[in-house]
Image 1: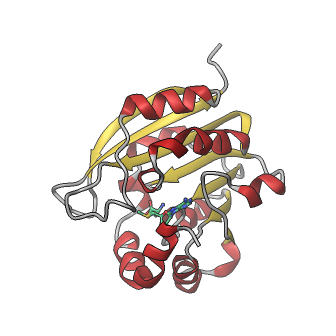
Image 2: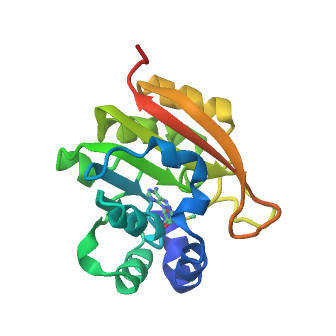
Length: 202
Ligand SMILES: C[S@@+](CC[C@H](N)C(=O)[O-])C[C@H]1O[C@@H](n2cnc3c(N)ncnc32)[C@H](O)[C@@H]1O
């Protein structure tokens, strides 16, 4: 089991309720204009409580949620209607299951996950995210810096430049970005979001 899944498993009730207390539309205000047409295929990588996966399913998308913590998967599935989202046990940096299925998505969301991967894994993460994204598709990420009380082996700092460089090496072009406050009300937490287009912009 990966270390971050072991971190989330015993805290699934606490984290599930906390994440689900916010609304997808509020958390991801900057990303909304990048969502594809209704009915498109979306992957939510590190889907956690399922807040975003079920919100996007309710908007009419075909949503696959990848989540390595069985505790978080169980929390999400028991808190929502089961048929609306397909859940799988898969993890960055490889996304081995999704890639073995050769599944391709129009939009890939990776919200609040990459800070759980060390800098050395960023290249692999973006390669995997790009590999499951359609030729004209988009990858959206959000990250935050670790706070002083976060466990150092679970939380890693990434600069915007490091994220952009790793994404670019994987063939992903930055097309939009921004910063946002924490909708869950944590003053010390600031979020950085970035949207990438698969391939170069013509
Ligand atoms: C802070 S939560 C974010 C959950 C959700 N995406 C959101 O925005 O509310 C981080 C999630 O990433 C998952 N995670 C941790 N390491 C991961 C990895 N290597 N690959 C995919 N997901 C991972 C955790 O199990 C947890 O559910």
